[in-house]
Amino acid sequence: MNSIVSCCKLLGAKASNVHVFGGYLSRGMAKTIDDYKIKWVRPVKLPSIDPRQSGDLGLNVSVKPTDMKVFYDKSKELQDADEIVKKMFTLEFQPRRETKNLEREKVIALVKRHICDRNSAEVRIAAMTTEIQYLQRHIAEQRKNVKLRVFLKELIDKRKKFLKYIRRWDYKRFEWLLERLNLIYIPQPKIPGRVSRKDALRQLTKNYCDNIIQQKLNIFKAQLKERQKVFFAQKIKNLEYILAEEQKYGLKPTVSAKQINNARKKLEEILKETA
Image 1 (cartoon, rainbow, N blue to C red):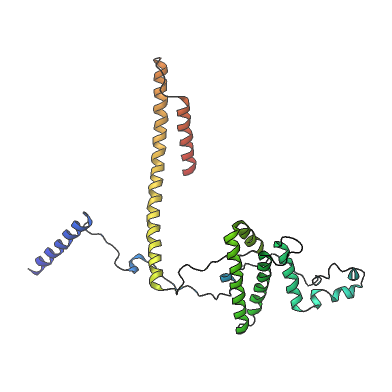
Image 2 (spheres, rainbow, N blue to C red):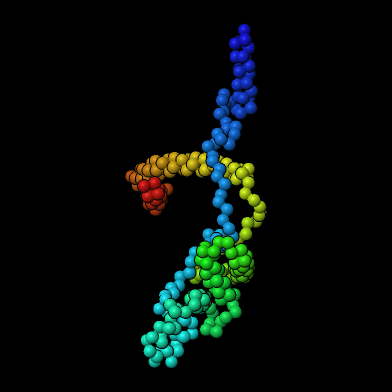
């Protein structure tokens, strides 16, 4: 008796399912996020001074230890001086700041508008970029220098303001500047806040469902392409048959050779796309 009652309850549940979901006896719908096989991993939090977060990919300038310090390479006195004297004014025998100064001048030369340009937004961004990348290399050796980290953070934020200004008023120059300085502009998120598992799982679920929909659409498009092959092949045969019959009986042609050629071209395009 109990088995009969349980069977009746099961049939009632199936019947309600049929009524609600339009004829499906068993839907097999996902009840939890684990049914989608989606795994969420908390992203690694990068500090704002990290090159991957600031967008610095490295400067395309070369500074060698044999180069002369800034403003000394065109000195007439050094050109006539002894080799030992010249070597004393190379970067190899100068403080580290001289290497940074020479690198800064070479980077500024990439973006300055004229020879006396020292205060344009492009030049100031180039100078800040040189300083930022120099400090990023330096802080990798001294990770506990809090004062340096704060200064670097402020300098990166200041450069972002200048980049945002150029991006707003001259977008072509903004793109040219990023290309010359090898930078990536990373704007601030519109909705700042902490990364939460709930919001991330919602986005992952949405991406997962969108991917399933896109896969089904791609399959449907492929099926349509196959049907188009048959359709245009049959269309060419029918048009050729109609044209031949009209010419045979001396009727006014309703089909032109141009229409047949257009159908052939369309068939060739479809064959190339699916090849």
